[in-house]
Image (cartoon, rainbow, N blue to C red; front, side, top):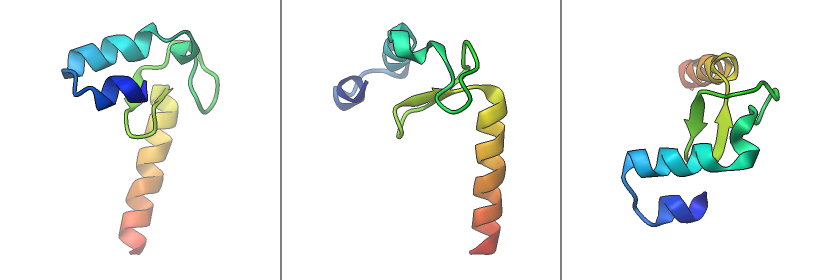
Length: 65
């Protein structure tokens, strides 16, 4: 996946490669099937629930700073 990003592909091409990876059929955090979100900078996919949790944590961290 890192290679795909490094090749400066279009967003749709990167997305196609992400979803084509067999390991990306489960959320990287909780293991839920068919995750809907991709964290390109981390090269992982997560479900909507986990993506929402991370967003809440990020907001709290930003407010604390």
